[in-house]
Length: 61
Picture (cartoon, helix red, strand yellow):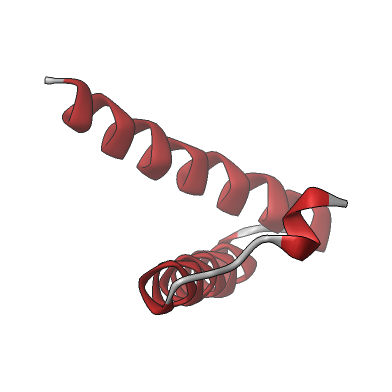
């Protein structure tokens, strides 16, 4: 697989860690509001996707 052979820069690794931390916080928050684990993941995914889309949209401007 290409991704396994890819060379990651420290900046890329830092960015990935930050994304994981953000998702973790979103999931923890969603778990407090959701009635089930599945619903919590759906909520966290929705918000995280929105954050990523918002970031992409601001880059395009």
